[in-house]
Length: 431
Image 1: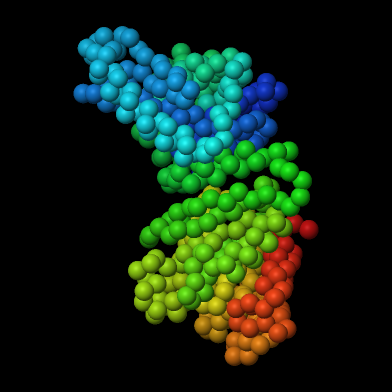
Image 2 (image 1 turned 90 degrees about the vertical axis):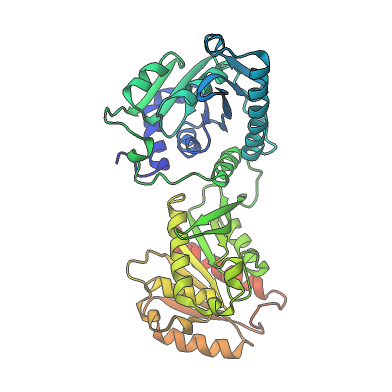
């Protein structure tokens, strides 16, 4: 393997593009896999990032053969030789273009939202993908970019076969490729992690780049929130990922029984953490069908594995110090998972939790653990006091006076958020 993942490839590609830093470049990522690579390049060069949406126009009876390409802004590139050789009439061309225009518009809106395209007129434009197999899409992207007004086109990729790089020299003014192995079969074999890049990740990275340094209004740290699909290796779970610019750590939430990622209490705490510069992931621990069986809510072992798998999924995308915030049975899942051998968690916070359900795992927890309980939640308070005696890690029990189990009293949830914020920033962020 040459690259650990796309972010690693992007960082290394950025080093090879340092000579363009003072050229006022624009970086364009080919969706989807090229955008995580392009994000790292744009960040290193201090350049704006955008997506280049290109649709190849395939010959109707031979789709792999492209007779042209279209791009945003009405850009249309046609190869007259292929049109003549394939005996395509005006109606054939119009039918293919019509179908591809609809998909082009859908993708552009999905990825960029209402933000306008970054202007390319007279600029040096770096077109980035995660790798090249045949080079057809990359060549079309270079032609579209040039038609949109770019003064100089640079094609940059981590890996490609030598013959493809040679052909692309005619489409771009400069081709930068880190590796050109002769024994080339597929781009994915040169990555340790070449998992599919979902649309949500593209949207998130483009939004983060658009809200980059110097573009945010003064005040609390702005967080970009997107819906994500958390793939734990067994099934896909819905989630909400919020990433403040420059986030130094991330907190993954494990909700309690009868709740979900939409929990207003957890979302309130998450918003406070975002304002402190901490990223947050709230996701559904159970599918709708699983929630119908109440026994699943109290099956702590599988919930703990799901939390750990979701965290591993997140780390493949955001390599940040990680903490867990658990509520009720979600706290038991967090402590169970934190007691697993090799658990690499920086801190755990339990809100109104059931740490007793983690059983013998409590003694194996090494992450600093904060237990928060309402003063009027007498049964759960007693359970937390007993559990605290089992913990062998750094720990603290905080009792919020006058609060019941759901912390619905005025100011109670604010105190929870403040305690969690201080605990996570102390243990996850550099001093």
